[in-house]
Image (cartoon, one colour):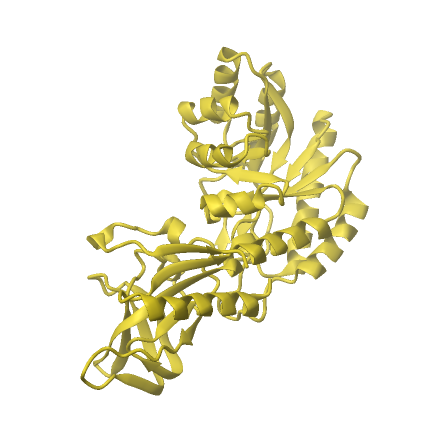
Length: 402
């Protein structure tokens, strides 16, 4: 994604705001054209038997979904609410339905909304899908989600390979397969193995897919299964610590082709369902500095906004990367406070010391009234934040195409 071009669009919008509106800048800004181009290039570069789905949990804004609906192969939803959002955009786009705690109502809604696959997370859930499908006169295509015991690549989050709430324990897979094959309203299509999240190593990610293929082939041979789908999950990461050193997609695709040449079987459809990797770079969180102060030897820039809008930094416990957009306007009759060549911590308006988005970051120049533009804010920003804490106004959401 051309992040420089996207930055120019965001800066232009901020400058226009400052010239026409008196209130401080506070907005999420999305470059929809860049998003579409990024997703299209990833879809087109994948091997023929691969499918790219977008994990809606990363950013479920309608405008985002509309841009992706005819670009990716489908959407992955983790709730009935997400399924409904998807169907409001498209009645035809394929949907995968995952998540470890599906209610009966959600399973009914998934069937009624014609999801393509339901990921069964446990034997109990599999039995409930069977019962509800039978009651509705349906046969439901299912993938068994498995939590492997194998050693997996290191990543920011582990979804498997250790005790978690996700999936069926690998040692219980034979029982789950036998049950699925015995249930008349269940059509076992294959397996879902999403073991890690935010992985930055392209070669190791291809090795992970190879491990998945090996396990699934073993189960297929043991039980005489015709496995048509292997969902390798998402887990492709974004490097917030070094934005110039991102996941090497071209290397991943090259290594993936080698894996498939060695491991794939006839009729296999290999699914990937990234979220963060698709939308992160297309979004910015722009906040204007409303105060600068020195406290116990440290400098703080207090901005219009905070983690009630953009919870990602405190959730992931990192200092989020940003640029500074200098604005000339100064409406007050007294001097304008500024920092020069020093470290500053960027905080929001909340009454908690945890409202921190960037910590001890060196800036060459920052003044009250300038705008801090947080980069790579298009995923897990607004979507995961506690919007109404302290009842501050919500940010604007701006969607740019040209």
